[in-house]
Length: 67
Image 1 (cartoon, helix red, strand yellow):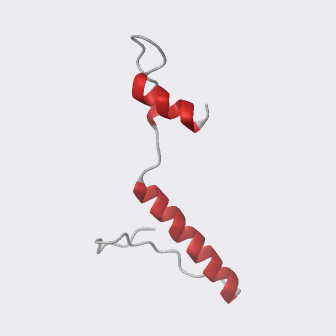
Image 2 (cartoon, rainbow, N blue to C red):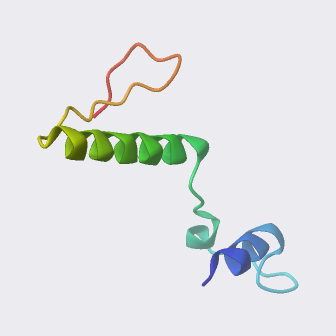
């Protein structure tokens, strides 16, 4: 199912009286996007340094380290 159909299905269901499938409501969050951008930045940094760099991610406002 393409993303546009997935959004529509999540908002209005498949048809009159239909309950949307749980998997159709599985959308990425802002946090998912931020983690993806962090990964890309670290991959580019690793390429420039020609060695792997730490991929630790600390979301803004968080004191905990996340893998």
